[in-house]
Image (cartoon, rainbow, N blue to C red; front, side, top):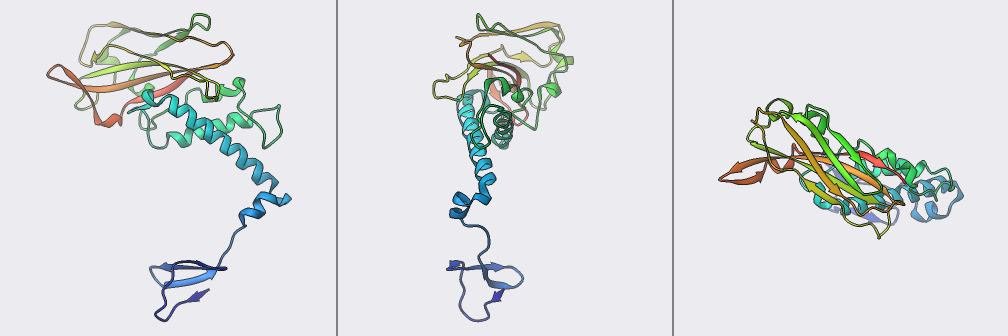
Length: 252
């Protein structure tokens, strides 16, 4: 390793030398290390690296497509690490393929169940907001999805949030095949529910999907906090405490 003691100050690379600056020593130079991209792309010794890279890239692309489809549902209901968690789950889905060889494995519908229980917002979850079990039902023939919670007492069964006066539930039905033929989801939201309400109520949210029996269906459930001011409802805290979860995955 070389250290500059004169007036020459370089940053970057020149040939096989990399120049950089550290706090304690100042400007330094060292030989470039690492493996060239050409070698990784062609050397048989890096076959596994190429295979892993291909499948990782495939999972990233699938995640990007799914996030784009769910854009409206995820708005204020996901954190900035969700894309990473989703890609990680989808990589496992790809790796579950027992038909194709390594490097060429793909997302098979029967393996999409690995997405179940994926939280879109790591800072909040449905289980910590709704303290009473929610029930889901979906009919693959009619495409009807139902979210229910009987005798829900908002004052007792829904977690409070400072400044929030109401909460709203969302039911999201999303078909996903990983192709450009996938349509955006059907999203149905409940009425605004007053958090201080002490009388039992029956929560029921229904949505109908024009279903394709050959596609996987993801059912997501979300909650959002609001503050009512002069009859208008305003989202609270930029969605930091809103939740959304992939509650069911139905495969063909």
